[in-house]
Image (cartoon, rainbow, N blue to C red; front, side, top):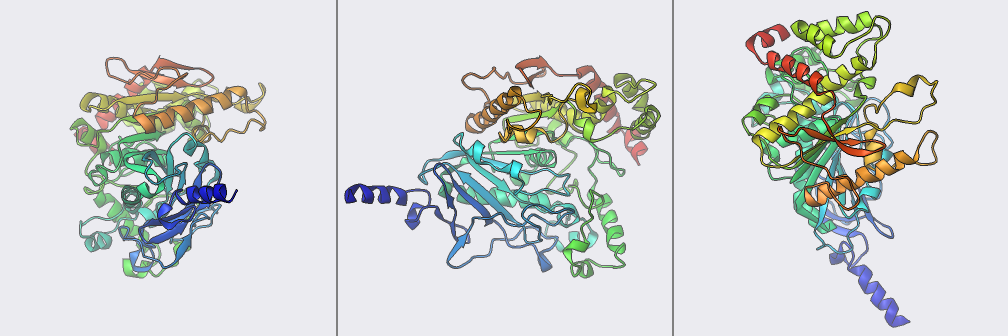
Length: 520
């Protein structure tokens, strides 16, 4: 009996963090950490990957992590970045932490790694949201990591003084630099958790999916991942002084000028003075611009991303990208037909007429086609453009999807004609669909399992296909197919493709001198 006990004890000592002879204990940059050991996973919450970006480090690129003595208990989520609202783990400027869920029993297992980047319009978000719990994905044989990044004006403010401080002569995009620092930390440390730094896939939704798109275009992220998954993401619209969904990007010069106006709004004249303001006074309660969105700075994001992809200047890795059927439900195009028409004219100018034909509105109500216009302007067209450009100029496979899982609303409910709204896909991918909740169907549970399998297969192999799954054919410009994910799974021509071509004509025009002048 004693012999069996000591053999068991020795085996436990060879678990993750074997060098410490302590279950769940691992040495990383900064020092030794202690995680939570369960039957099948070891979980680490709140691992610092950079120095706290506070005081003089506010609005600076992330700095190396500060070392600590003894064993740091990494068993609770760190505070989320400063933002409006109240995240589950609280919020603080001291927010640059990440989390790891690993099924590895030994440090040399070299499991594939998937790194989650949360959404929230670059103004909100946290790794502590329960729907972002990576346990179910990790149980599919991958190391799951979620990283935090600065959001809002603290994460993305540009200003001439900040650009002058920077050795690269730019400002803004601190949140993206946080993501890159987190990925660099993964490269240097993930092997201690049983992960393989050469098999990292990044994935995110909404602002997180847009971040994935931007990391694919950033030379600073080259070599940090071998695959990318973007859910309702993509950043392929041109810069525009007036912000609209799908045309959120600004030039450094435009963003700096808005930054000057932002500082003066506090009755101040310098960044030095603004750094003395308490962080919670810098953060609006809602999603607002300026200063809360990435910009084309010539450094992190070198140029208009569409042009970068046209020229083949991007990180050419396999991608799995897509969007939801009713994204526009979350971004109203207008409450009445006339309001919708006015909004389309205001945004699309000379192309409003052709887009109103492609996305028509009847005389008495704003129908689904109007919501589809907002879906495609913000998510459908950028994703489709990404697929077409990479298929044209890249060597890696593109896997395109269309998620259309309909909730079981009562027939007389106002939601009965709804498709899949923005953000709903996250719970499905993370396999957090609760079959005991009202209106949850067997189909909901099954498609969640299928999506979890496709996503983790892609992380493992660079290809989503696997046993008992509908074959997912790569998108090509000769065969522009998407995987339909809903109560059934099947390959389909790209939904609403003719409407997307009408949208494409608008974006082509926007990049002409005439279109650029009109947008001013």
